Length: 314
Image 1 (cartoon, rainbow, N blue to C red):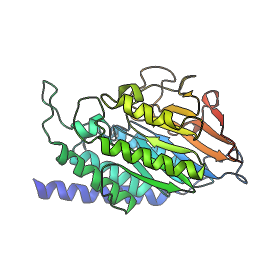
Image 2 (image 1 turned 60 degrees about the vertical axis):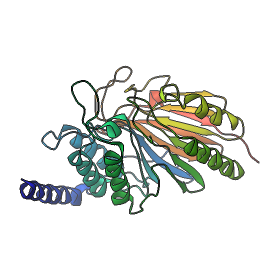
Image 3 (image 1 turned 90 degrees about the vertical axis):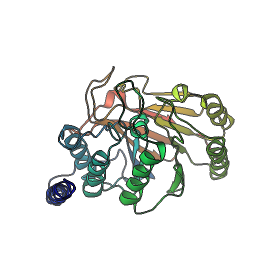
């Protein structure tokens, strides 16, 4: 059985490789608002929910979206996937996710984050997990290393991209729908924000659950974010709720902004009810533009764009 599965995986990888070779053919799919003055350009999606190997619909949705992204006039500096990468955290699901990213994602940095589906994994009929935290987390560590080429020492990590901090928070245990954040991870976040404040550039924090849904660490996490309110432009990027684009996709408390990313792989629970959607973020002097895009159909959804003026540090 293992030999058969291994053979299937090789054939599957070859097929994706052949398809990917044709991906760059064709016209440019989209351009930035002002390509001469753009400083940072990155893509935000969430909740891809890649499912079992015999069901390819969500994988095809992701590949279609990645093709649209890959043919943009200016290559994305990063792709953020804000949690629930997979449906059940299985090896096959992570394997399909990895192949799709390796063959079709052209972004300079890939920043995936775990959601409750990834960390809880396969469940019993009573909702309890059949796997351990370490077993599920290892698949995530492998995904990050094999898509970015850089192993991570801890489940939470950060990258500095064109002067901006991108901070990926991650659960350190299993707590149902909540995010388990240790005091050590929170202290680490606080320290990074102190460093970022000295630079004065916007900060992007990725966490699958919105602040109010984090769980026991919600208050402590919120206090850290508010500590830098007015000192930093912080963008707290989440998924989880499966909300389609709406007027409330991006809200704020001062200079702390909350970006509610639509579900990429499943139908939305409300708002703009299409799969395959997310934001293309463009940073310019003094402002950032979040452009709503349907990456599967290759069209902008401009009624949900948001331009945010940034703190003047001059």
